[in-house]
Length: 119
Image 1 (tube, rainbow, N blue to C red):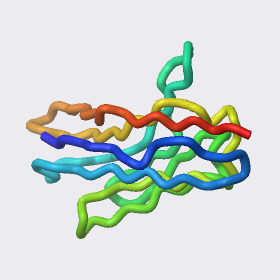
Image 2: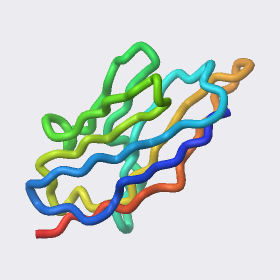
Image 3: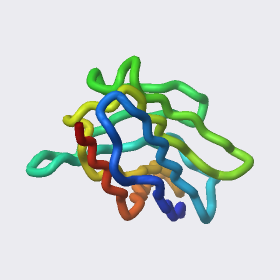
């Protein structure tokens, strides 16, 4: 199973950038996809960008052209690079990993990190 620890949240400026790292610990064999989810106040948690184990990416419409999801496999770290920040990007961001173990999909979450975008 994978344990995930996010960091790097905080206060961002409209039009600015923030980078969020997600460090993964544990057993990585069987990981089929990872991603970042954002949960704004009073709203459901939603996928922002995701990436599969073969590098295929999927972006929410709100993130296309502004966010990227680079990863460093040697450091077991997934990143969320947020550019051209908007106030509506304000949310708690959670790192996610889906791992297949003995035919069962195990979903792992980090503790979340708050991002607040202000003008």
